[in-house]
Length: 461
Image (cartoon, rainbow, N blue to C red; front, top):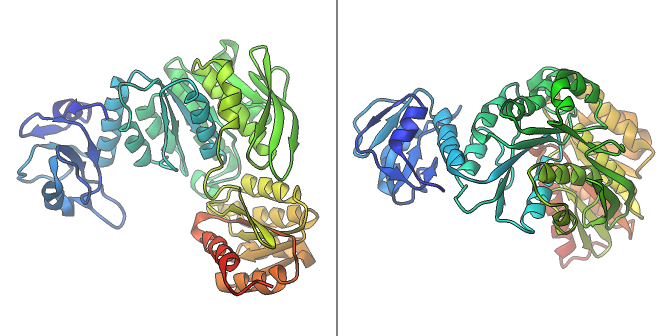
């Protein structure tokens, strides 16, 4: 982290500083982990208030506090109205001191993959960093910005959202030089209110980057492309809005996409140059993700020569279409989360495998009024592409209904896992099992049970 003085933070937050104006070299929100000399910012949540742990933070090593409550403290203290915003402003202070160019990534799905691809490209020739895991919310984004340092050339920041103005808030702190929207799909409809609400919410990242003279990037194959071209007409005319996709006039174009159970290959073209790319990732949709990542890096000023080695050295992200081969079956672990678009892509990926194709599917979350219809569409989509659909959760009953004879519903993880063992693994030597569902459905419990079965001394057969 690039150090800053408490007085700088107090001014930004329009707060007050009591005690000595010390320089802090680290910021924490965890009272159990306060490095010596750190600033502890006390956040409030629905079920906790870190102001209850101020003394513990000081005893743990905090040299200063960020609070929204009054009181007498033994260390310097910045007091403000909103400590969550204070954390964001701390991230902004560091961002403003950092010389790196920053790229931002958002979208209904594919954010983390595109972030990892862009990071892999940039680190081929530069000092770069990116968001760890999915630290992409009001807390995670500032904590990521607080990792910036003076030696960085580039940083890729992932920004998530489930409600209007989520991205607007974090964009204030990120202040990206270029930003890409991977897609606008049917995710978090409950929070955004409608599909158009999702479009507007994701587009907040464009409003932010364009307002500062940066570059916005969107997918040309999106159903919202005409809306973007209308809403951001001047930016398109000025070359500040770019597209990626399968069209000849895209800033980054992918073509001749071929997908197998081992890799995805395609030709990527940009700035008059083309490369044959082979990704060690599954799914045709990852060609589109690669185009998004390449477009973001090129918009930031990265040379085209780093695109191919960067993309081809990208590793799959844990819990996202990771293939694990075991004796008697193949597991495709995509259990981390599930948006509607990602579920359809998962079905397409599973269908490309040889063998008895099984999808283990848990409810998708936060879909509001669209929940039933979207789960029905999953069942219809899977019906003629795979051999068996095994479902968990009340909403996925609608998927089972539409998928018909290939589908079964279960009331528990244990019951589903037992069916997998007795009716799939014992009956089929070449089963390919995709596990997919929202994070709340804990589909990782199924992957864990499958892995345990593969390692059991009691042979599956």
